[in-house]
Amino acid sequence: MRAFLGIPVSNELKSKILAIQKRFSNFDIKFVEPENLHFNLKFFREIRNEEIDKLKQILEQISEKFEPFEIEIKGIGAFPSKNYIRVIWLGVKEGYNTMISLAEIIQDSIEVLGFLKEGRFVPHLTLGRVRTARNKENLRSLIEELKDVEIGKMKVDTVKLFKSKLSPQGPIYEEVFGINL
Image (tube, rainbow, N blue to C red):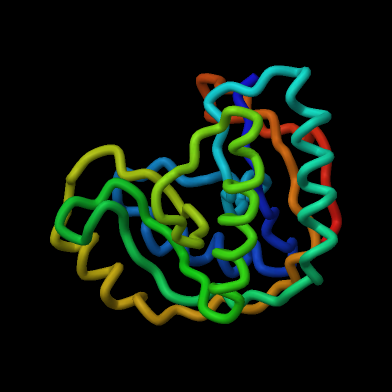
């Protein structure tokens, strides 16, 4: 199954995130649905059912090394660059290094299951994917205007494995399991 490890966004912050998405409504962007907002720690192109229990065991061991921590969602940017915008994201200020440590330990620990380690991890929350370069200069200007936007703080106390089903309306995420920190 197609799946990923993620940290769901707290419900208290979703209205602020949706307000930011609305600021980009004049652009050709496919926004992440409110119920799908999350911080991605590891994307699995394919994970077999027999690997899920092993993954859960590894994550339970990792969770013993981490206490719940707070992050501050602040700042906006674009991947791969401001000159070629494909993804618009919100950043992490406070808790940035802890989130990186969590993601790196997960990636190092699951290599024994055959999952390749990804490149440099950058904590971010995807707002949407740009479909066309229409109004590129205006889009770049709005990102610059909002570069220091403050969304708020949330507690990170769980990591969840989500199944991702693709549909014509967009992806549908279903929780497989959650591990508390």
